[in-house]
Length: 126
Image (cartoon, rainbow, N blue to C red; front, side, top):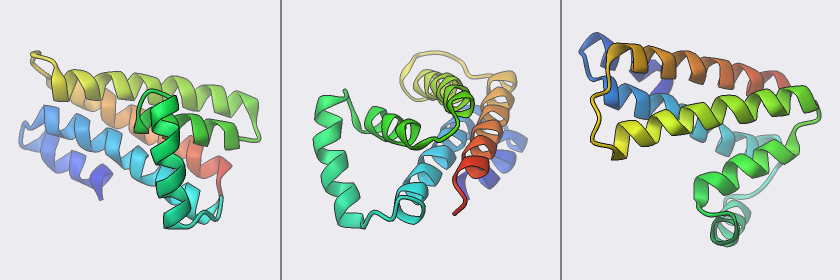
């Protein structure tokens, strides 16, 4: 739903919010991969994310590192890492920095999210 929302947000000039939704569409899909592809229960995910976030510098770092480790294709894993890092950087700028987020940032985030989701879907049949 977050990815679909980006079109409406961009159309209504809510560019920072669209960047946020683009990023979180990938976060939500990574959680879906943990439960469907990796067959982890909600409790397992909760416990592992709690412990992992302390060690890996935050919940999102733990999630990205966990998904990265599950890739069978090294080239796709590296592509995923580059894309999600770029998207995470845009999301931090959008949510926490005192910067104006323009339409080009919003479109870039949307396109990066689409590419990230495509890499994830190609590698994790859920």
